[in-house]
Length: 132
Image 1 (cartoon, rainbow, N blue to C red):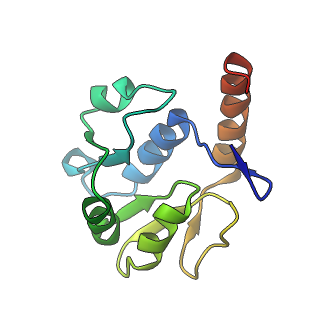
Image 2: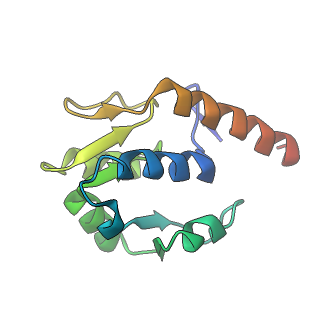
C-alpha cells in the first residue's frame, strides 16, 4: 500500500538484517532480548524471527506495544504513524528510522542506504509474487 509516495511495507528481511546490525553494537550481544511487535495477519510468516529466539508479540494491545517501544533500548521503526508517536516519546533509546512520510525527529538514526535499497529490492520481488 502506498501513502504519500512511500510504500508502507518493509519486508521481514529488512528487520532481520537491521536487528543483526544493531546487535553488533551491544557490549554482550548474547544477552540481547529482541521483541517483535506485529500483526498475525501478514503476507510473510515469522519463522525466521522465531528461529532466532526473538519474542513475538502479535496483535498486542496499544498499551503493550507503545510501552515496549517507549522503553526499548533500540527501536527499529516501521513506516507508520503507529510506531512514530511512541518512538518520539522514547527519550533514552536509539531510534532506527527508515524514510517515510513523517520526517525523522532530532536524534533518530537513519538506517543505512544499503539496507534501504535491499528492502526496496525485496519489496519488488514480493510485489511480483502478489500483484495488487
